Length: 175
Image (cartoon, rainbow, N blue to C red; front, side, top):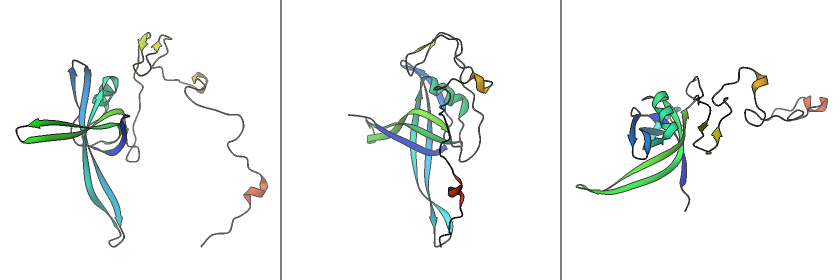
């Protein structure tokens, strides 16, 4: 059976906490996502229900989240969702959790300054298992000439869409 993937857009409601386990480092935090809808009767936006979910970030992602995300930040979280269940003194308990594959700032709500994580030559990319031994890993290109076709950008010959003079005639307005 495949995992259930989910994307949640919301705000961080607990400060990210990083800890070491037998299986590596993990960073945990909680996100709240509140439904918003336009109420035509009042001509104003109104809040609906709020969905709370715990997020766990393993490895390098967890380290980056711990250094970049704070309580109150608007974020986009993508990962697999699951429900953990257990018995307690109060009876059967459960908790919904996302194992994050990606976490980022919600740029609809602000701006950010992104910096790539520098990796020394010879490190292993955990996502692909590829050995990064070219000495350029983590280097941010300073000029367009340094960009690598197919890795940093895609290009094609010609325009995306051709235009001729007949296409530029005025179109009637629709009522």
